[in-house]
Length: 357
Ligand code: MN3
Figure 1 (cartoon, rainbow, N blue to C red):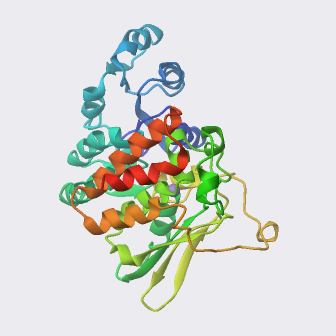
Figure 2 (figure 1 turned 120 degrees about the vertical axis):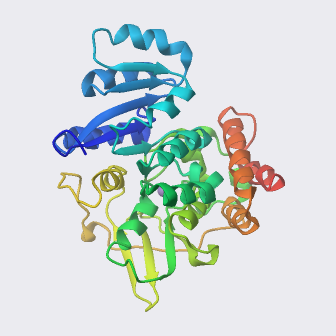
């Protein structure tokens, strides 16, 4: 590390939900972190604001049509300015980077993630799709290059935290918790009538559009099962999904002696982001603290696989292996887009996905 031990961070997707929260964490811990690279696809106005505040070494706008505006608004600054998805791939190899946060949406995160790993960069992985579609390749490359993959997804961060100090103790199984989303307990008839406004209101987590729809349809949990398989090298039968509507237990690990370790706290993405950024350290912060007495009742239930078939489809894709999880993810990206464009109804999404795997 250079710059007085500050970690130099590249944020791919800095204007999205994870990207902006990562910058919040960095802003609060400016003696620990330095922003080296910022990239965004289309939100050039926010990218400009961020660049002015954090003075990174370089910024990249994915959409080439916005290059001129970016260049014009950042005059006389010592900031390198690039455009296009090729440039996003190029900047991750800068030798000044210590850690790359991959917070791009969907499959677009795959190529830069692979490039960063090939260059031996440690990854704070927020783009679960890169493990869903290419988990085998990504984990193999990371092993070869010595890159650490630090999970940002709250469930996977929970498991990662439970595994600290357990290096030689095999995992019997993990419990991946799920809030159940806004339509928990609803049947298919109801699901046929939900609007995108209903689906975009998540009860516990404030996130981007794609992941919010995935959460409502339980596909997010399915993708997380696949993500966990690769991150922690588990068999599908070792991964159990537990619906826990309070979203306080973020996930748990059961060891071979039957002991279970769980990680808990108020749902706030800034915590797993901060853990990945500062790992292996825990940084003091002033996030809201959990109180047991405000949550006298924790509840747990089995996921409803009949009305929310997506979770089952993800297990099926994992069993089939090969490129089937990739097909699952591609079909899901298409149906979510179509649902957000009011082209198809919510309940039909799993049926379409099922036909493509
Ligand atoms: Mn999650």
